[in-house]
Length: 478
Ligand SMILES: *Cc1c(COP(=O)(O)O)cnc(C)c1O
Image 1 (cartoon, rainbow, N blue to C red):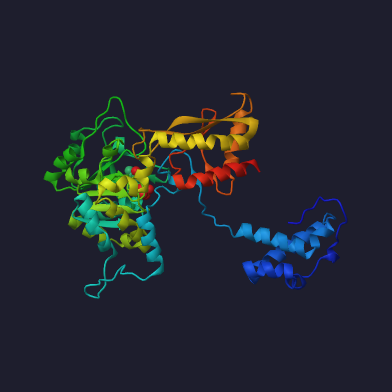
Image 2: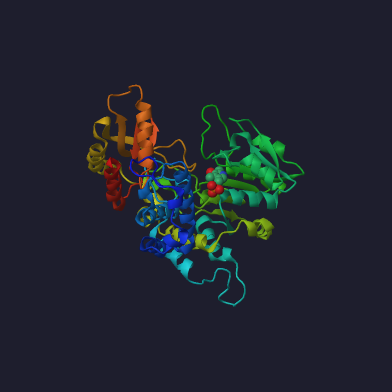
């Protein structure tokens, strides 16, 4: 901690004050008031050790031993140490549902509900009608059924958990038929074949990467078939010479054999998005209406709620799923349920959804709105960056993210930053340096480098945050 290479007199190890004496000085009383005696004592010990090492090396300035210097170092060090590790950032990546930046932002209604659940007892598993034990799923399943047309529903930690639980319950030591075109990997950690293995199910791959036919499903059904499963191609698209089989057709094939059909929708939405000019994404209702026996989907993708995994579908299948021991291991906490219920309730009034549901509000922002923000922010950033970079307001394209509609792009607007002088040598390094500086701000700004340009997409910058971003840009100068 102490600065070693200063000019001026040096201190020796014998000059070091004792820990007790330091703790008695007013300079450290202030630190104790802020951080507590335990932390200050430990920090002082570490600091004194470093001082001793420096003193023995002859590099400890005498100045470093003033109580004020100790006080300052301890305060700085403990402030840094106690800073929250989960910090707010500006998501200017252009990806609205960015998995690494926490996916969906929750609407106002959910915030109040979570705060209440945090601070007051609630009927989480308590039946207010009978005074007996309740089921936490009952808080939310009627609403989920109403919105999806499913007969029953259950909620777990995330969609990966929903798929795992479904397979473990219905397909252990039995076969699950999936098209080769749908053996999805999502972000490395979730791969359909791996989830099958961990659930104890045997994957039966059918068709080819680009083409799977009804006959492939028909031929695969046998004694051991537990499920026919369809998986949403979340983060890729198979184009060209392709063929896949619709849910309704798979259902027709499965029915005579009494084999249920499960669909992992991934994102899944509860309302047709084309109404707001967005591309169509298969809704949960459509999938249930097509005859799927079970549908799984995420809470924090297009739905716009907290991290959660929903399973909706046939009553008897959901009942079996709920009895599996893994259900208890994968269950959601009260904060998730508190956040999810008001989000789901917003879907009862689709007319107001784009104002009230944050995710939809961000997805439906107009290019003009973002262009106006860009025009205001360009001069601020340009002033901070000086002559080394050029900053322009530019059209760009955002993505929904989290596997929803991977190939569809949304017209947006933002700031395009390039090193001055065009694609000269070293300009890649200049961009990387700037990207890191923005990321290192007290309120980190996360952009995206592509085509020798740093793009700051303003789609996710709502009006109330614009001033704060502007201040961060000014901070960059320092
Ligand atoms: C995103 C996704 C998952 C995983 O969902 P999480 O909620 O992130 O666990 C599973 N399957 C598909 C098809 C997905 O798109």
